[in-house]
Image (cartoon, rainbow, N blue to C red; front, side, top):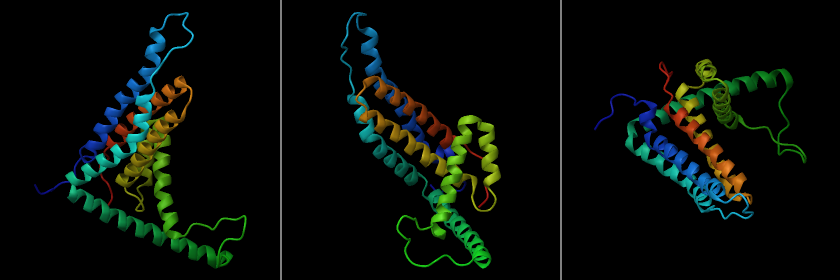
Amino acid sequence: MTETLAPARRRRHARVIALAAELVGECSRAALDVYGPIAEAPPGQQQVPVFLDAVKGLAEDAAHRFDTAAAEDADRWPGEVARETAVDEASFHRRCAALEAERIVHNAEFGEPAPGPATPGTLRLPDTPQLAAMGLVGAGVDFLDALDRDPTEALDLVQGLTNGEFTSGQILDDALSTAVVGAVLLLRNAAREDDPSTAAEYCLNAARAFVSVVTVASIDLDGEDA
């Protein structure tokens, strides 16, 4: 069937949302594999056997499962993926052009930076394409930080950043990717823990992070700029 209208983001990312919701439950059950036996043990029992297999399994599989879900979402909406790609490319070129213009003005005032590789003990400054990519990542991170404090503030932030360089969809999609990575890293921290209770706490923190994934993937703002 031909796509005529852009889907709502909760439809566009439906498989990712469903997986995140599923992982909320799986993380909670993995934590219960630790807390449950402790709760059932007699008060005088010193050593309580607990189960960490589910924690390790989640840490091993979560990233791949998200990659699969994202690919399935893309296959379901090929027209929307093509539109997003075109918007991303146009936006990226605009940001590069703006940064290059800033560089020319800066160099005219302060002089060209020294050519060649960075000297020992220093880092080479990022080039224009790298700066353009970093700007979008920074906008996504700022949105997530604001969302954790106040959802209204976060939405206002997105509206304020849609100034011709970014679209709201780009900011939200980058924030979604960052949220997924953060949740997966919490699971990997859980799997590396020797202390079962700490591993369970990481799992519950990951469950909360997956709730944020659902929230970010579901936000839809009207009036997006192309």
